[in-house]
Image (tube, rainbow, N blue to C red; front, side):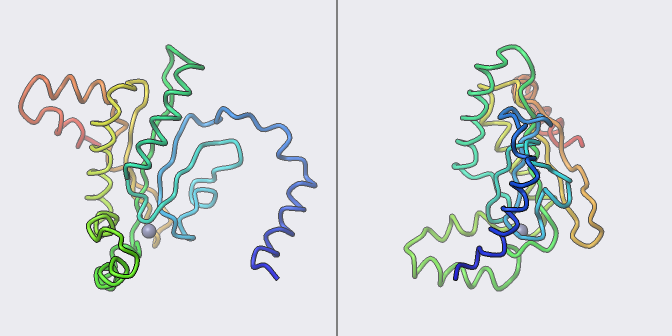
Length: 197
Ligand SMILES: [Zn+2]
């Protein structure tokens, strides 16, 4: 018997409501979410995201990896063909307190897992979220610097506190074109602007 069975029963109930029949492919909220795969960190719960609201990418830590950048760029290019002149969407990166990737045991586990699977240990280490306010700033900066070709996408960074249930905005929303132009002025203007929450 599949472990999915209880969820398939919920699917039957969902299908019976007909709620899926009126959904559009264009998201209602103009937000693209990147967050952790931790089951406690489900945007349907802590952000009230409903079907049709927003694309969501979840991975270990909610980190902005190469794969995440590629997916955002793909969806961004697609949206630009549909809405050439308008703002496309805001990418909201949400890291959280108490992330499993930040536990001390995770560091030891990385070595064993890398040895067993042949994965690069550095890739596993890059997923760590020890201080979510630090990693979310780093990930927003990475996205902003790589999305300059899609200036209609803005990027923001947030931390979800598992204790209080509240989300705090740490960065943004920042726009790649503005960060680029401020960086070109010189000094740390771009970085400071990025840090202004
Ligand atoms: Zn996590």
